[in-house]
Image (cartoon, rainbow, N blue to C red; front, side, top):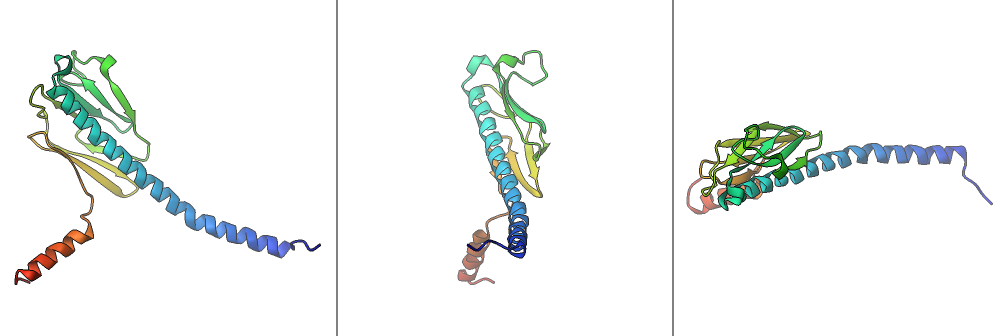
Length: 166
């Protein structure tokens, strides 16, 4: 019966080490990208939920979302720090440490109309990637893609070329 020699075992260990060193960074980048996408969608949905609760005049109150680098909170009241804020209605969602939040830190939606008290962007960053959530004065909440898909640029070019220009 033939066994493995020391050189064969070392070659196998080196090959496995090379494979791990090549795939581990790719796996971590993929994980960070997925976390950014999941939590961007989560914040977007939480903002929309707050807006719907305010528009339906649930508990005869405004609703809003308060954001930090650790979590985001759906709350009832005119502000997260106001006396009419009732913590029993809070829905708290944790954010991973790899995601950093900037831009708006609190958005409150008015009763009936669902208009925000502030407009602007919530920006989420992780591993060199970012996602931007925009809230306009009419209460439209949208996720702005970080980079426009390449096919849109191609469609624009083809349309311009067919039109006789460029």
